[in-house]
Length: 191
Image (cartoon, rainbow, N blue to C red; front, top):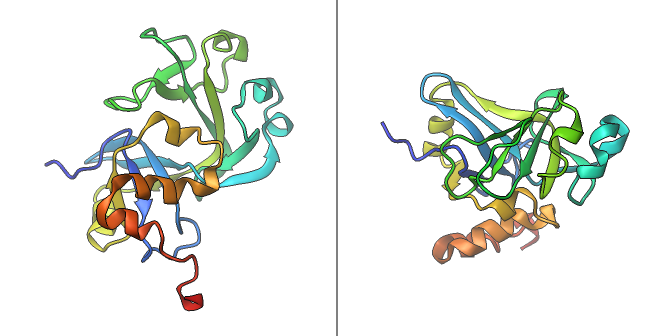
């Protein structure tokens, strides 16, 4: 059964989603299985914590802003990293997102490996504390209830210089009704 959710796609919160963990969030799907569920990272929640404060060896590789991002509400005491690499090789310490055609050169980094293994290969690099997770069928239910748009991801989404504008930017580039949704006021009561 094809549910439209795929590794590399984006889950973009609709204006109906008011959960503070996901309000106006853009989530990159990094794992998806019909039986095991879905795992993703929120791309547009930078914190004020510099990467070199919590992961000093990795601080020099970070693509601005040079802070840890809150990847989601699950396991906030753990970190994962995404990096883009050029070419077709798969450097040690880096694993491409399976099945992700548009973001095929974006992958997960093994933060337990020495940064020197991948440093010369990395074009862009970002660290996330925590992740977003859904059990089997849970995300599909949320989509059917109108909480998420499932949209194609682009490599630039993962490493956007101004992540606070990512929600609007992703919706605007879709055109039509979704471009209109991008203008939805943050607080409709002020309209």
